[in-house]
Length: 492
Ligand code: NAD
Image 1 (cartoon, rainbow, N blue to C red):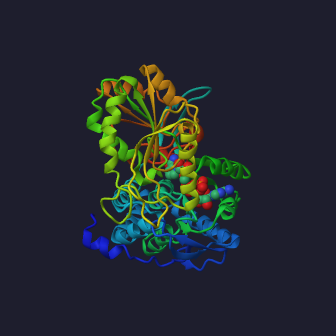
Image 2 (cartoon, rainbow, N blue to C red):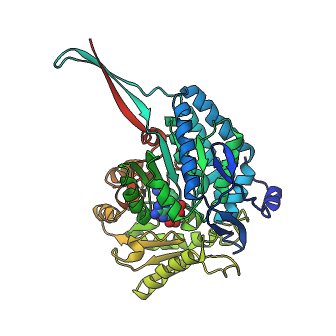
Image 3 (tube, rainbow, N blue to C red):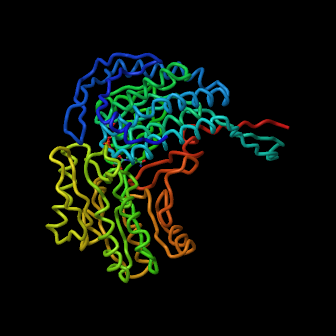
């Protein structure tokens, strides 16, 4: 799977068809409110979509409940085969999915191909295999007050409301339904109203797959529909990816039914450069990573903590890295930074920059290529000379903006790294793996990469603590979120 320049030329004009909702395995015409969807690179309206009504959400939940009765009783092998059939169908239509993502999110094609389509498919296949696993734990004998034996098996929680943010529509959805389906649950999926087209297409592909009707339902809507879905008495668990502000609301809404939540929220992840590092060897990689998807990534490692002795070398290496961050047309395979999702978000990001500069911050590195005439672009920038308490240092910016601070000793670096309301991810650049691990083990973050690490893997947990959320996605940890343990004890 790799996109050629001929295919890019063919796909860049792809006009997404507006698909209907997917409820109980059938296309359903949405009857709720209507809004426009934009291409953030061209500022053009690429589709006008309608959301579900509350009655249609009720229907989707009813369908998921009915499907749960059969899906949860199917063997792991049967569920696995149906999930693989979805992966096959997604693979067959990967170019359409890619085109949809590039056009509605503005993610550069190279990033979208890897981080959305390939990764999303790989993760779904992993979940499909994991559906077959026997999770029963045999506890053995216990003789108080009488001899007994115990097993712990699991039962699926039921109907899952899966609500996603805009930045990675395909794989954020896949993290949720992959784990939920592997556990034996069924799903009502609600994508971001700003990027609904990929998920509507996913719904159509779900209908073509061997998944039984109603196992995954796709609805559409804004905050009111999200609120209705997450507080619905027919839902058993809410899995949400988005901002911490909305995450707090979700928790309150789910509490109406005493429902549990998985919350995958934002971050302000530290990127520590330890003394003794060969900064020239990783400067490009480091700057390319935090700015990926124009910085619209929850785990963007955009809080750079550099030992004071390395600072000058670090800046010199960065000055060579920055010009490589090509800003512009997301369909150009060389582009690294595409547009931001909407003009209000672009203004918010620019507001962080202006405020930091007004408060004595300095633009240490900048790309100053003229921005395309159309599109909600921001040039990447590295800010410095800011106190650790500054808003740009503490808050998630979600744009191509990083901040750099210096520290005197490793204890101070660890203290600064942990001095944030978030706890999602971190990276440690270290001269040796041992030194990197020593620091990693003291960081309050759900994922710690050492010397760049790799991508998120399907068998490892992803998520965080503090304002980064509750619970984990991916791996056995992600599946366990959708299972309840059941202790079965018998007298001997
Ligand atoms: P957002 O919180 O604005 O919206 C997310 C979703 O919530 C949307 O579908 C929206 O319609 C819905 N929503 C809004 N109000 C609601 C309510 N009251 N009840 C129910 N649903 C409601 O987030 P966004 O701007 O789309 O996404 C960006 C955020 O997502 C960033 O903070 C980013 O860090 C975070 N994120 C986290 C992860 C992770 O895995 N930790 C991954 C990607 C993005």
